[in-house]
Image (spheres, helix red, strand yellow):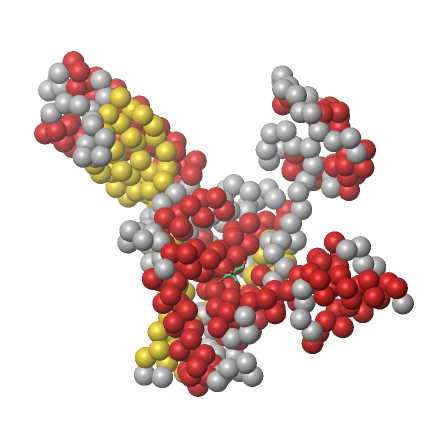
Length: 438
Ligand code: MEV
């Protein structure tokens, strides 16, 4: 039975594990696993991971893979992916190969604007607030000079600060809606530091603003924080080819193109399907976000908000057939960094970026959009032809056999056996039992 604990974070790592051993598990094998199997044998590497977060007791592994053969704007990439779902990397690689033979992916960054807001309450005269804001705006910018200096030297910094009146939503509610260019950094710390200083300056200047009454001087700052909704930090990736090049053993080209476009249109029109359709896209995007040490929660939140920007949750991808040409594309907001954060700290993140030829944040946006588009192509292609289970269960077979305790030779034999058979939990169990009894 778990019990409350005081000062857990102050305990040493071994003490924390002892606490787990006493309070959470009776199985000594579990603590042995934390201590031995999952700790890095190099104490310096382990310490690095321990210090990423608080209360670390071990490491949590995900497979780190590479999907090769991505031709993006005529340059070839192998894309690193960190993901547990069996079929994702195989599907990405298959889609990459398919489009490699049809001209590859074309991409374009449509914007790189990041957003942050100071949320505050002001219940006085609107004109006075507008005049105050116009007079204080230059001071807001100079007040963050020490924070923005080095970003500005590299061509980034504050793009704009706009006063927004949102009193139609909440009585007294206003914002400083601020936009930024953070170049190769995701920019969360930079943006939040600027915003907190804007809030301080705003409050101080309001106190000294002669036109304000005593009440109006007391601007109440509620919070200052970046927004993960970045509709103008946008990237587009596209593939296209003559419909005649889309045929396969599974389906003739014309029928495939027509069904594919229909499937995408269904995801555009219908939220239940759109969510799963976009989940497939995020299979590709998240795997690269994780491998490159980016913030998958930020990306997920921003992407889904974007998918609902017209007021109904919809597909992130689009497909058309016009004049015999099949076109399939994605537009997706991605706020990423290739410097700062974990990028120079986590050894595998460093390697992932190296595998990607050390991209700028803009290049990484394009690579990730391609990973999402490729994943969506592979999923929809399976859905409208063979169905998803055939490929999915094939990739899942090893997990099932591991779960059932199959030996290496049994696994090998059954992988061959199931090459031309339907894989289900029951059929795998039965085949393994039969093999064991022989
Ligand atoms: C499974 O992880 C993803 C899919 O469901 C995506 C889709 O339905 O498009 C196959």
